[in-house]
Image 1 (cartoon, rainbow, N blue to C red):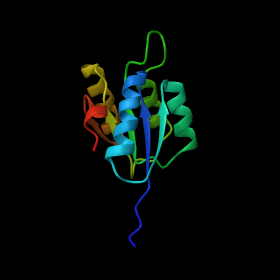
Image 2: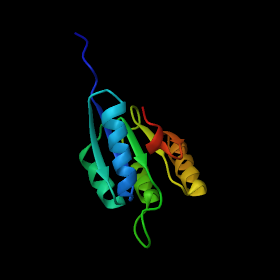
Image 3: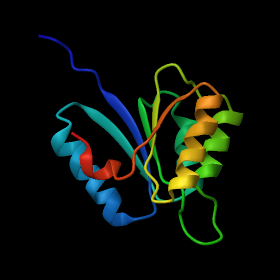
Image 4: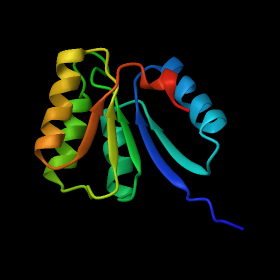
Length: 125
């Protein structure tokens, strides 16, 4: 019997509705074993990153509310703390198109694999 790889995913979004859609798509459509962490704030996402150096995919939103750390702070953490880049794909899904593209550009310049994919929560699977 062939072993199925367990996929580790981190999802950052301040919208519970989008987090619920991510969860539904990941659990029902991906059809693989997975371990997914969901964060609603940049600080929560950073705490997950500190504890898990082996995410396969990281989904990042940029705008997380007024006067609070944003997805850009998570990007800075990833880059400044040399989060392992060999096996992680980062998907920025922010409605803030210029800021989302900027996040990907910064990650790519630091050697990470990143795509900007607006609406990623809808098209998984």
